[in-house]
Amino acid sequence: MEKIRIRIRGNEMPATLYDTPTAQRILEVLPLEGHVQVWGDEIYFSIPLILDLEPDARQEVHVGELGYWPQGPAVCIFFGPTPASTSEAPKAFSPVNVFGKTDQDARVFKGVPSGAEIHVEPLSPDQRFYPES
Image (tube, rainbow, N blue to C red; front, side, top):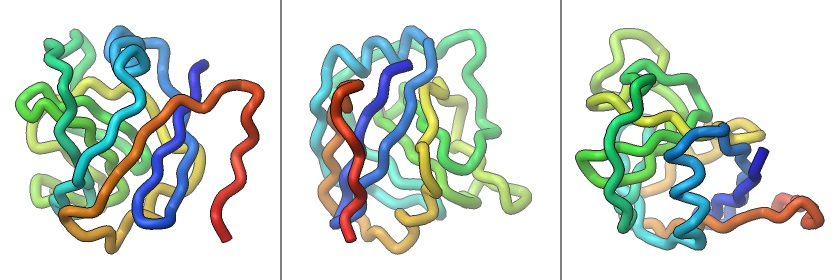
């Protein structure tokens, strides 16, 4: 499984990509940079990649999952309830292609403001992950 590193405002998070067509396409366009928007306990940012929904796209997601939202087009990181949620679980605005999951607690992104810079890059197997202290 492929690994990526997500960096936002001094927080670094490794993530594992699932074996999906969306994950493969996102790997092909890395590195990505942008400015996040906040929607409840979700952050998302626009990316220059137009993809269709996959057959298993869904709105109900888990904390830490990464989704591709075709309507953005954007990458979403879920870490808690959103305005669409009916419980404490995250729920996307509309179906997303779930393509990965953070390797650590994604709630570290709680409090990241809209407009914060995000960087997403590949994490090769020979790289070690050292979170910032």
